[in-house]
Image (cartoon, rainbow, N blue to C red; front, side, top):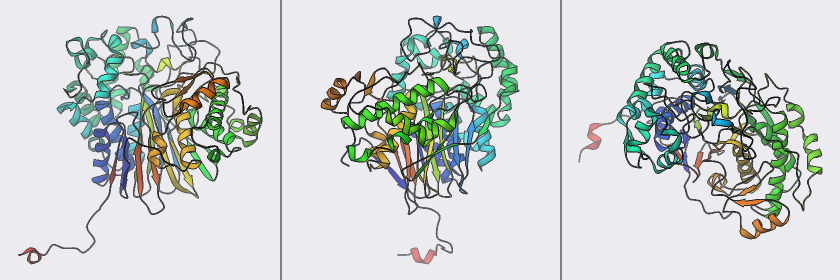
Length: 553
């Protein structure tokens, strides 16, 4: 397929690291080059991202890690954030003037400041993954992050733009303003940013481990700060937090197996659901970006979001009908209801909003370890303040819960947030074929689904698949990127779709293609600062020695 791409893939056989910042990709590649595995590389990358991409991820966030081992087993580590014990269905009051599909509340109490913060899981989850599956020490994998925090790094235009987008909220907090709004204006691209308080926090964690936050002095300080500012998190919330190891969701599509995290991550469940419906059509023959294909994509998206809103949430609180949603028979029922010539409504309720600003890491090594992991502090710069003296930016994950009571994702003490994360690994004949994921809130799993169609149905290269134009709807407007032609746009409107143009749907996707000869091909798209770094070469052939006389001239 002829499709112009802005970036170029990387290829190698010893390993591949793809993140949304070149310094984080370099940190992961450093671990692989030093003899570490993909888990070492992923954790090094995430800690580095908390420094160089602080608007997207931090140790006070939450997420999902999907790890495949060389023996073919898949492990899901759920380190999603949870609602504090002091919160409940009536903690917030929904804003009656909120736009459809949002979770806004009166006073924005679930979006900005300490009242918006859920109990963090990132630090515990990352270091658990390292302990269980990595080979390096905390000090080893955290060293690049500490280096960049203490010595500084150059601000990218992307970071500058993100600060500008939320400067009004950030200006309310002196600590975050001091770093990102010097002299009252957004920090400029190219400026060297040093975060020395955060470097000190990371050094303490490298020495003491996650207990420094969850049961130790950092947790005491954090809980005291919460109490002083009116937040809901207590020390008991921190000491009681646990990760959960979950069994993955599995489904098939045209001979491929799709594997990913289960609820409370809704992504893979509904990716499989949508692919099951699409399997009844010859999507490849319909063509990429055509009226017929985009119409089908829009209809299956609306079906998935209708089911997601009604039934997908933390399985400890909601009975998620996974077997039905994953079944081919249910897909056939839904498929039969699609009108090929007209858009229709699918009784979609308002869905949990999800993390619009997130980060994703995709890593593989030569030994067969694969990591696809999506982590976040939810919105840009999370709750948009810094815990005094620590450099830590808390999440604003309470904005993901439905502020209305008696809904699948209403606030309940201890409940894990529902997300659209979709760190997916795809296999063929028992071997890895693709690994991919991205940030972007409600647009994450629809974008992964479309990338899989690009790869499997349309025969795209991995670079084309991550960069190709995307579409999105949950039952309201149908968002179309510029790569969808104007005639298609006009025809879709005539069919009843509320088509609108957007600059981008979701964020920067990263993906690895596993070739049969052992080559790893990695790609990142134009929607973020994504950078693939591949390892080629290797150690010297056994028995090779340097003979001084051979070098004489």
